[in-house]
Length: 335
Image (cartoon, rainbow, N blue to C red; front, side, top):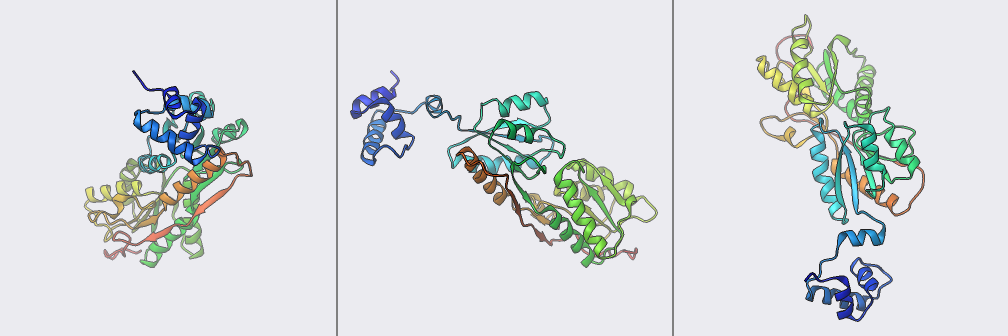
């Protein structure tokens, strides 16, 4: 027969409600009572019911994360977020950001979770404002939307775009192309703005015929390079709005028989684990994802705990990482 909290209460000489509060760490229960209840529970091999605990505390102990399943970055974020939430006794629920809008809203705003982390919002997304209106604790991670009054944890994408441009200029490049992300996202917009801004300050014009926009995916990089390199005046270097695009561009360059960086320099953004592989050695911009996740979980925990102040924007600094793909051109072509 399954042992219940009533059995523990009887053996410990306390009420059933005292057992529940003692085992969930309620500070109103004395230390001696907590020790006695814990000892009896261990002796009887009692396992608390999560459902009963959730009902008694009006908490689901679940955090929903809205992700873009088409963006390979989500797997990195989810793995690390799962560990950080587990340390705080929360479980992670994934919601696909490209699904039906009403279905997404019902999953994250219907009371089935304690809080929401949004990592896939576009600049015109209505979901952040909806969560704010309904009083659902939420935080924007990696991307943000102005005016929503939600907490946001992002990287300094403008500074990162500028750092990428600076690395290419220092390597001697002047004819530079760019494989940019969607302008409908804060990451795409801000990385582009930082990159263009630094080039303009240096007096280097970005030839619009060498600019391509696309998704933050491998195919964007792989499919864009052939057309750029077949032109009358191809670029000597490419800024890619994330590492996945850069990997696609490097793969395409290899298929075309081009050397990286000898024929075409490439620089990415994010500093994924693959970027540091010796066979890749991608020059990139490091984004401190662990720090961003920690900030997001901390801010969300404060919201769940009842903090109701104005929305906070936490911008984490980025760092240029010089590896082997952004070096000078050695073909004799004008750089």
